[in-house]
Length: 439
Ligand SMILES: *Cc1c(COP(=O)(O)O)cnc(C)c1O
Image (cartoon, helix red, strand yellow):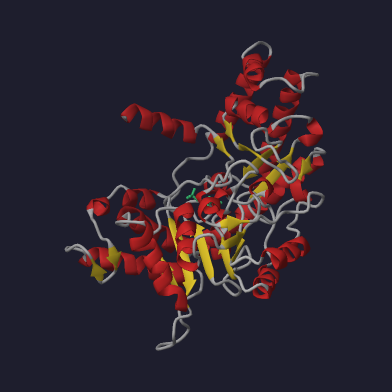
C-alpha cells in the first residue's frame, strides 16, 4: 500500500493535470480527511442523532453548514430575519446529492429534463440510450434530454422551451460536466414556470467560480442547487445540497434516512476547511486565474487553427473538437498519457457514439492551483499542438486504425523517442511548480 501511495504521489507531481473535474487540495484539507473524524457514527441531524457522543460532530456539521451558506451569500442579512436558504452537507458525493434531490421532490416515474450526456450533461441527470437506461435517474424517473445547438455549441433554449412544453417535466436541471459557457438561469426559470417544474442547478464543475463571483450565481432563480465539492471548489470528494427553506424537511429526509446512513464526518470536516479557504481573497484570485488560464489556452489553440466547441470558453473548460483532424479523443488521450499530460476524451455536440468520442476535454483548475499562469498555458498549447501533429503522423492515412495498433505504434521508433523527449520537457516544466500549496 505504501508503494501504491508513493507511486500515485509521484504520478500527480510529474504530470500536467488537465482533467477539468480534478484539483489539488491543501495540506489542511488532507489533514482533516485523514483524521479521527472518520471513526464516528452520527446518523441524523445536528442535535438529533441516533448515537451518543456527537457533541463535537454537531458543532462540526453546524460550522460546515454556516460556512457553506456564508460562502455563497445565503446567510440572512439581519438578526432575526427568516433564512431563505438551507444546506445539507451530508451527501457522499455529487451523484448521491442529485439522487437525494430527486427522491425529495419527485415521485417514481415523474419527469426530468437535463442536458444530454453527449452534449456535455452529467450521467446523473437521466442519461439513457435507445437500448439502455444507463443512469438510475432514468430507471426510476422518466427523462427527456435537451441539447446544445450542434452548430454553435450553445444550449438551445428555444428548443428546450418547445420540448419542455410538450414533455412537461416536474424537474428541470441546469448544469453540465463539459460545457465551456455560462447559463441563462433566468430563462430556465421562466421555462420551468411555464410547465410547473422545479428548477435545480447542478453547479458541480463551476461551484468554485460561482463562490468567487467568476460565474453567474444560480441562487436567485433556482429552488435547489447541488454541487460536488472536489472540483473547482478545491475541497474533499463530497456533495452538498442547497435548498429553499420550505424544502428543508423533504431534502433532509431524502438524504437520511431515505438514501444514506451515517455521514462521512472526515469529509464534512475537510469540507469545512475548504469552504473557509474558498472565502478568501487568495481563492478569489485563484478563480480569476483559472478563467484567464482557460482563455489563454483556448485562444492559443484557436491561433494554431484548431476547432473548439462554442469557439472558446467563459469558464475553466476548453472542449477541443478533433473532428477536422480525423482523430479520435481516445487516441489523443493515450498519446498524451505517454508524455505525462492527463486529459480525457469527451463527446462533443453532435457525437452520438459515446464509445469513440471525437473530442478532448481540458480544464485549468488543477494546474492553476499548482501556480501555472497564462504564459504557461500558452506553452501547454504548443505542446498539445506537437502532440496532435505526432498523433496524426502515427495514424497516417489509417483513420480507422484500432486503438491497440495505435498504442503499439507509439512504442516503435522514431515515435517512442519523440514521446520520451516531450515527457522530459513536461517534467522540466513541472519542476518549477511544487505540488503543495499553503491554501
Ligand atoms: C462531477 C459531476 C457530478 C457527480 O459527481 P460525483 O462526485 O462524481 O458523483 C454531478 N453533476 C455534475 C454536473 C458533475 O460534473
